[in-house]
Image (cartoon, rainbow, N blue to C red):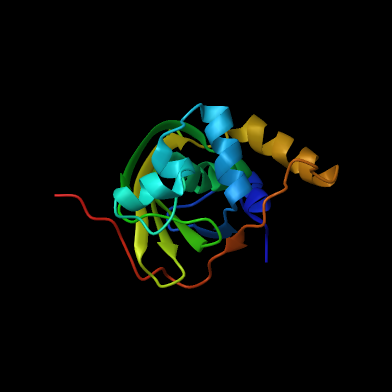
Length: 172
């Protein structure tokens, strides 16, 4: 089975699916707060989080949503837009799974994807859409060269989905 980077080098197709599983730690949440400078107490103070009706501090929505860009980065997707709906909190130590589905590609390589992120109980935590530009011929050739060189930047563990996902975002 080809890696996401290899599939991108060959050229992505409508219907391509990717899945990634992550578990953010308290340290990940702390580091994201430092990088983003988002020190909302709901992310870093247990008592405040409980006052907001959460069982513990929650991961930043954009930290959770970063799984969208993790997959996008592996396939060379140059994002032009993203939209997120945060449905359920994510806590440190909680496993989440991100499913990515390429839904549209036009003749100029502009593409759209639908993304769903679930917790271990199958509860949707984030629904997202993203638009972007796929790698063109020259970029795909460079991806092939990178792969031949060992591609040290391909650090993510992304699983190619062979089975159709049991979801699809619909818009009115």
